[in-house]
Amino acid sequence: MTSPSAIQLRATGLVAGYRRSTVVHGVDVALRAGCVTALIGPNGSGKSTLLRSMADLHSPSDGRVELGDGTPVSDLSGRDLATRLTLLSQSRSVPGGVSVREVVEYGRHPHRARWSGSDPDGHEVVDRVMAMCGVDELAGRPVDALSGGQLQRVWLASCLAQDTAVLLLDEPTTFLDLRYQVELLDTVRDLADHHGIAVGVVLHDLDQAAAIADEIVLLVDGRVDAAGTPAEVLTSERLSAAYGIRVDVAVDPATGHVRTRAVARHHTRATTSKENP
Image (cartoon, rainbow, N blue to C red):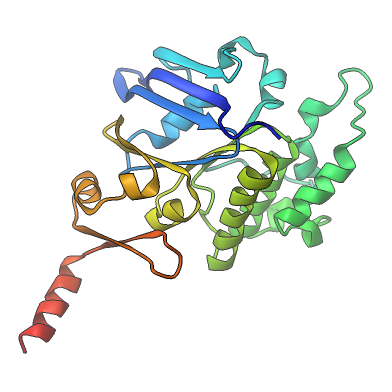
C-alpha cells in the first residue's frame, strides 16, 4: 500500500470557469493516498468545476493539475489517465439494452490489452466491486429498469472497477436512501483505510463530511475559505458566514465527530414561543 503521506493528485493555482465567467480562483488542493478529502461549500462555490478540472474533464485557464509523480494530467492519453484516476460525476446518460454487469465491466476498459482485449483480473475485480456496492444481485437486470439509487450504486461499481489510485466523487449520495448513503460512505472510508486510495468527494451534508473526511476544504465564491481537519474547518462562525445562515456546531459525545445544525427562522420562533408562553 502506498504511504498515507504520498500525494496522488494535486491542483496548484487552479483557475477555471465557463466562457467569460471564472468559477474557481487560484485554488490549491492535494489528495493524499489513504486519505479522504471532502469539498464543501454553498451552491455555485466551484466544487464540481474544481473536481472536473482535476479529472481533466474541464480545461482550466490557469494553474496546474498533476499526479503525485509530477506528470500533468493533460499530458496523458484518456486511456492512461483512466488507469490512474476515476470520477463519479453527478449525472451520466443511461445506456439502453445493457445489463448491470456490462455497465460495471465498462470500468475495466482501460486495463484491457489493446489488441487482444484480454483482462485476466477483470472478472474477479468486477465480482468484488459489485458485491461491495450491493448490486451483485442485480447483475442480469437492464440498467434502464433501475431506480435512481440502484443506478447510482452501479455507476460507483463501474468506477471502482477501474481500480485506480485516485477516486473523485461528485455528490455520490444523491438519489440514495439513508441505508445506502451510510453504506456508500463506509465503502469510501474502507477504500482509503484498507486500499490506500486517495479520495476527493463533493458533499453537501456537512455531518457526512465530518464523519468520513480526514481533511475538509471549504470553498466560498470559488476560493478556499478554509482547509484542515473537520474540527478546524467546521466552526459555527465560519459556516454561518459561508452559508448565510446561523449554523450551530457541537461534538457528538458518542462518536467524537463534529455535528452541525442550521437554525431556521421557524425553529427559532418555536423555541422562543416555548420559552415565553
